[in-house]
Image 1: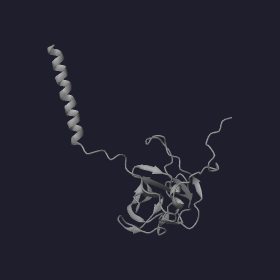
Image 2: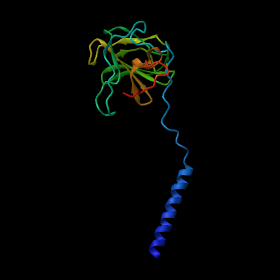
Image 3: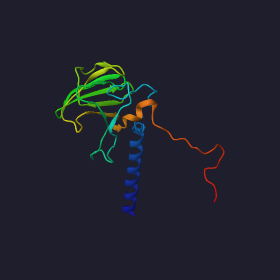
Image 4: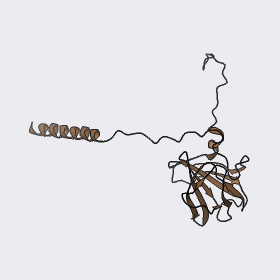
Length: 186
């Protein structure tokens, strides 16, 4: 009988501790909200922002963060070509990473673009406008000798930069006439 009483008391103490701990913590806010989809014309494709980007290699993210993959797009851009900012924002990094010149921009909507290889005279904190020339394509260390790698992150997740052009993702609409049931019996 004494053993059972001890188990009941210990169980009650543990249950009380769990409830108190739960009450003392702030409510979970859930995962961070994704940045809003940009309005048409808010983002443009580097390097020129005046033409459709000629994509050499598309976005191919890995299934797990630690696996290899292609976390951006490669667009045609020969060495020495001017590179324009894909959206308004500010410089958060300009320098070499692994021997490659890299430029990182934090945009007004909170997303971050990585452009490489891009040689730039801009400094951290400097503001840039959409379409403003921010540097020129470099010549060192890319897997593609005449291209620009453009990666975009929302928080810590890479997204397909091409989806940000023209106001968001493509949504397929149903071609079913209005009022037609989704399923019909054979």
